[in-house]
Image (tube, rainbow over all chains, first blue to last red; front, side, top):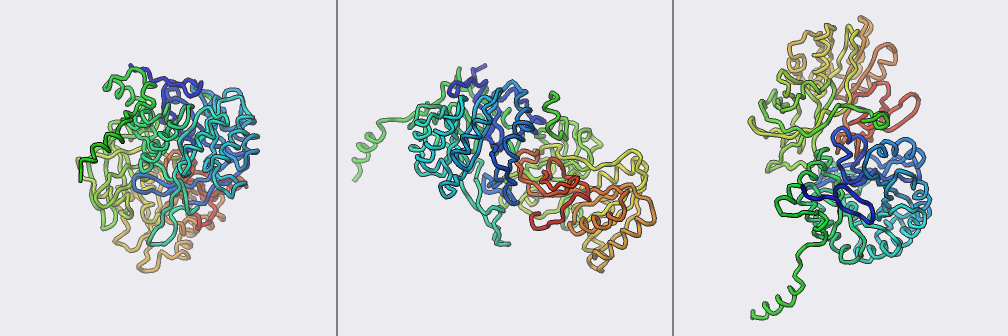
Amino acid sequence: MADLTVNVGGVALRNPVMPASGCFAIEYSEALDFDRLGALVIKSVSPRSRAGNPTPRVAETASGMLNSIGIPSKGLDYYRRHILPAYLSFDTPVVVSISADTADEFAQAVAAMSIPGVAVIEANISCPNLEADGLAFAMDPDTTFQAVCAIRASTALPVWAKLTPNTSRIADVARAAQAAGADALVMGNTVLGMSIDVRTRKPRLGNVMGGLSGPAIKPIALRMVHQCHRSVDIPIIGCGGIRCAEDVAEFMLAGATAVQVGTASFLDPGAMQKIIDGLQRYCLETGVERIRDLTGQVRLDQDLSDSWLRFAQQSG
Amino acid sequence: MNAVQEACFQRNAASVASHRCEVVRHRWVNDRYKYLKLLARADLAGATRPGQFYQLACPATDASQPFLLRPMSVYGTGPEPGAIEFLYNVTGVGTRALADLRVGGHMDIVGPLGNTFTFQAGFRRILLLARGVGLATMAPVVRLAADAGADVTAIMSARGPQDLMRDEFLRGARADVHGVYDSDGSSAVPNVGALLRGLLDTHRYDAVYTCGSHRLLLLLQSVLADYPDVLGEVAMEQHMACGMGVCLSCVRLFQVEGERKFLRVCREGPVFPVRDVVGEVRFG
């Protein structure tokens, strides 16, 4: 048996596979043994009560799906009393994902949720920042820095910053999160998208636009994990379109220390267990003794550009 | 599963899994509906109760590439332990892909999912109000009632007599069937309302179940206001992704004990009390 354990910024995990926030809830205990997962990541809670977005909230696309659920929330107190306890009864680290509208709200919510039993705070800074025209915090290095600083100052727990693939400045955003004290990055959230029914001429999502997930976005997420890996020293948790053990290995080679699985669970609620079993097979087949040794081991030829130039000069 | 975990969610099945099934029968029952029988290794017949559904991984074809699973009510189970049946209308990307599935081929299905119709041991007489694919969802209730020796009355609404699928609904059970049709106008809401009231005034019904028409659901809700002792249940639909209550896609608004709340069709449903339904059609 290969050693599947990984360490994400001081948090030891029995394997690198955990759910993506919003794609996991206690109901999956009908289909999965939670004590075999790397960590339990609960759907984001926001300090304000929200009804969520209008239906329809999901639409399928080629090799993926769009969602605009809208983080329905009954507030922090309800979450602490009625949602969190069930997850704390497993022998697996619990990651509480938090979403908020302003840096101050983030700070207050993070402090309120830093309670015994919670192992990690995942700051969903991919959500709209009401103080910046609704632009997500993680679209911009400055707002990323401000939000993560406020969060960092409010908790002694490890903080994972969940970034968005919708930014054009991912390296700067990743460095800002690291500079502000994030213990790890989650790369990343969904890609903003849209779909229209050409017969009814109506948007397929009630909210018009939504987040694209699934295999359709995997190359984007993989590229951005690699960009983060080249930019920061803190661990990266890869997320985006992962559905099998080979996908996990691919993200780890690109620079991820662990991964999150989201949409794949919607197609098979037992997907994460099958991925973990598949990782053992992958390690056996490829002679990997410790899965953590894969991180960042994509084989890049540093001299490729020069040798290609020399080669290409032979042509007319 | 300890007490804390058990108390915090409505458990609908002992275990849910993706089951690899063989297609053992697949045929048209008329020009729009197909009958599908699958065989799994697991005892799906023993694990599945009336009203529950499965999510089908409809295999991609040249013309249709469904990504998400498709929720589909169970039409029947058995007699083999692994046997599960569906009756479906070929209408969208998923069902068109499904319709091409050949006998001997394979498909993955996830379940059993959702809650069940209430049928108590003491029920002596039930009424079913069905239209379209709703009859597939309620066929297990017909069987349950017939096995329990209860009298079954059915109002079946269809485009015309050739679309009724009476035999597919009853599957050999005895029932008093009232067909109403678009073709002769008898399916109009005032007419069905009078028929419903006439039946409810003539016999003591323990329960009325409906599925397949929002118009008929709202009609039944208004009629049942005058028959407070009769249980009313409806099986509902909504766009779904996970089918297990995780993604929060398939919510609808309900009026539960005086409070309006969003419930998940896949987890708190698909079967709901008719009286709890909020008759808002826009966000269906």
